[in-house]
Image 1 (cartoon, rainbow, N blue to C red):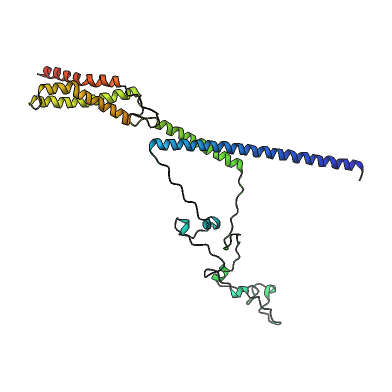
Image 2: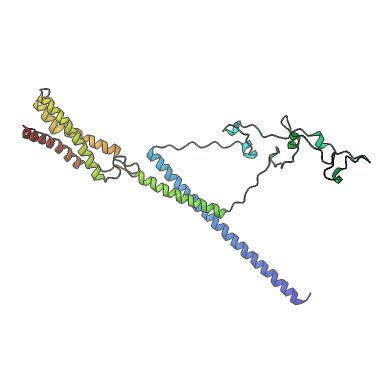
Length: 306
């Protein structure tokens, strides 16, 4: 071999070595990127789990109990009989090669074929022509024994259970699917937070409009009670002092405290920290002005109709 051939071989080996180093560096960079993406998804899913726990505690939902892990026998064998119960611990064991459930060996299948006697044309074996009667090169078995005599692929776990091939998993595809699911979980979590920031009572209204509506409704209810007291005073059941005390102080105070409690119970969002504004001066003015004004309007209307 000449010097030029040695030099060409050395260059070829150097190129192969550089190509191998480049492939190893690319594979190392790919593995680092996959590990970084997996760590980021792990942190993201952990934060989502904590946020969902906060949402559950805010709406009063307890965490579901953890599912029981499968039994080692069911996890290793992967076999479940038809109609088995839902609990893997109650499954019967897989059929094995020994015991009363083992398939009996067929004496006909295990016995070697007998050699044909010379001159016997009825047992010509595989050399016999097609269509000849009595050809016995492959003895026929009953249907049940032929089914039991078929060969099966035996798994390392034992028991004659056919093994299943595990499909190759692409980590890039799995990480992309996990990222898409995390994005979907973020979207649903944001929708849940928006819904949790709305109160049960008049969720689309502003806090000020909600407070005005609640205090006005409570004042209107106090006005109905005021009309009842006025009718009771007309027939002599309630005296004038009691009627005046209820109209000027009692019914407005009841309306104010009723609106205050309603806003505190149904006007508070689930995810808002602290106490929402209840507009106490506005409620006090509405309740303590609405009931006396209603009584004055009743007197004016009554005199106008007389």
